[in-house]
Amino acid sequence: MNKCGGGIKVDTLDSNPEGLVKFQDTAPIRRKEVKRKCDSLFPEFEVEEQSAHQRPFEYSQKHCWQYDIRLNNRQEDLKNAGLTEAEVSKLTISDFQFNVFDKYDKRQFNDVKSFIERHEWLGSMSLYPTLFFTAKYKGILAGAVIMDVPAVFSKILGEETKKWERLISRGACISWSPKNLASALLMWAIKWAVANTQFRVFTAYSDPEAKEIGTIYQACNFIYLGQNSGTKKKYKVGDKWTSDRYFRTRSAYKRFATQLGIRWGYDWNKGNTIYWDRMSAGVVEQIKNKSKEEQAKAEKREAPTKHKYVYILGRTRKETKELKNLFKKHSPKSQGIIYPKR
Image (tube, helix red, strand yellow):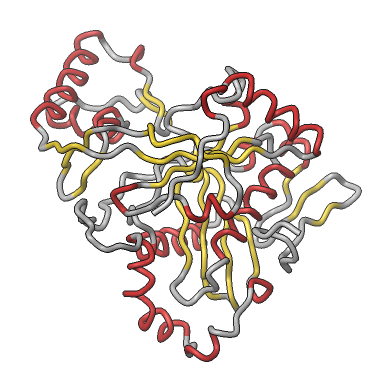
């Protein structure tokens, strides 16, 4: 039994002769569409950059920041749920219902957004979410995992990696949940994605600034890729520290255009994709120069690179073996790297 996911009582996908797949709180979706392209089921959509809770970048506790959040939120979380310490001490993974939903369920999306803002280190929703997974206890949201389109696709399995890759961008559990709920939900999410989409490669990061080393990923037997990822500099925008990518986001470009007195064309972007060829050369130059100027004058600081992990899984043992062989072929320097420890 897989220690991260075996023996869990969860909603299972029901199939029928008409070739439909159903899951809780969503409309039927044709299996062929799921196989052909996940984004037809979970199309990418815009999430405005959220103003994250202000996180101290000089965090001094010995335990990770997210554990600190659990400690600080516990009494209020218990009160809000109407639960006692005695009740939650008896909870096991089998008491929780796991669920997947799509972007059209606005109620669940807003619930998860608020949950992430309260319980997750980054304190905000990710930019390109496509898959949402939750764990609930008697209808109470107790855990969430979000998968995104990576900002930059990796090539750990070669040029084809982008067809299979999803980024585990956000994840959190409520303070009174069993300690292994996070790993159980994460593995359920991965297995659901493999069974119902084309995705097979799941990357994740752990932030040393939050005193994270990737304990959950280690517990689930992810492959460790080292501590060489992410920006080495952070820039302050408002009350939030962000990477240099912020200055090249759709919302930032639109903001810069407004500051320059340029009216943004209705056909200049679709979602987060910007069509520079639909603008005049002069407008493009002005907006991009403004982006560079804003980045240059922003307050900046050095930041440690992040730990990176990957989980590779196929629908069959044969497929998993083939994918892992591609990983060995294209990423020879990433083989056998020892997990970091505190």
